[in-house]
Amino acid sequence: MTPKHVLTAWVDAFNHADANALADLYHPEAINHQVAEAPVEGRDAIRAMFEREFAQANMTCLVENMFEDGEWAIMEWKDPQGLRGCGFFRVLQGQIVFQRGYWDKLSFLRLHDLPIPTE
Image (cartoon, rainbow, N blue to C red; front, side, top):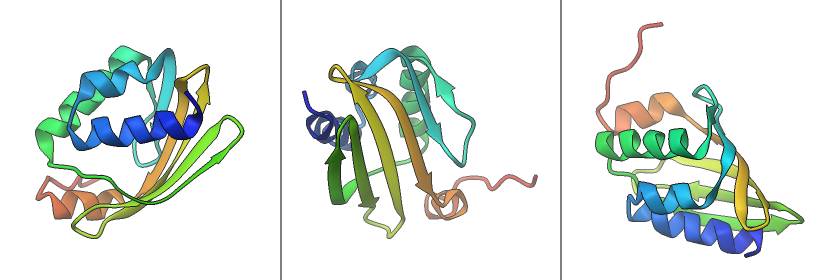
């Protein structure tokens, strides 16, 4: 699968809150680094991260723009509540090996009525 096809499958799995289908898209040693958080390393840890996140908040990814450049897929997204962000996905041999995402964590926490850290 091309990087854009992998990202399209990622969006579908994300919007179905399917942590297992998402994890299957990652290489066993992949890194997911959402810049507002510490990097998550390994497919099993990434699956666990998605399971925790889906348990905390109802999340939807609405694609605004999706691009492919070589081994990279890039996406600008928003959610129904107005949060916006972007993600960069490096895909090798049909698997995500690295992901980096940029979004406003404080806005996310407020939108989902989650606790705001004091540190």
